[in-house]
Image 1 (cartoon, one colour):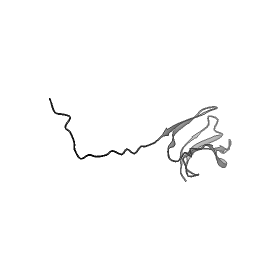
Image 2: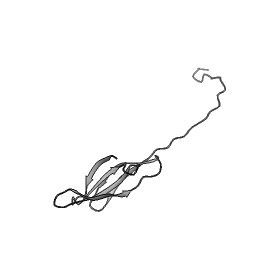
Image 3: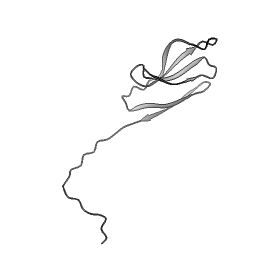
Image 4: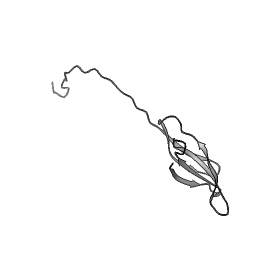
Length: 94
């Protein structure tokens, strides 16, 4: 389990991090004790990215009443071409 890039809420009562604790990189939150500034309780999910490996959170920012995060979608295609064995030179001058 890896927690990456932990950020705190402006009032320092919550911490937010990216973690793969459930097998996918998701956004998690955890309460912070206002006096000791230590984590309280277990982290809870804020946003799950469980669409296989297609979507991943690229980063996030924490505001007073909002969390902003970017999602990147990675997809790929496999192309099949029939090869005739001959190549024509298209760079020749006429």
